[in-house]
Image (cartoon, rainbow, N blue to C red; front, side, top):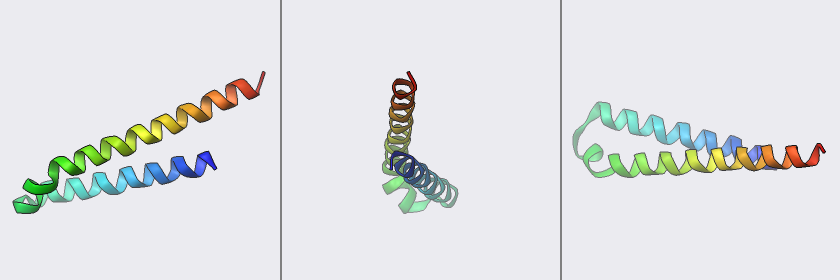
Length: 65
């Protein structure tokens, strides 16, 4: 279950990253309006993915003893 959530968070991070890069390359009003929001969303998804990976690590570490 947690591994599935990690994969979803990583896929969301990649999707938002690609959307941000495409918006930056194209420039214009969309990038001006949503560039920072896309960056914040990417950071949030990244933090979620790293947090979930940390939880998985801690659960596996404590379960192995």
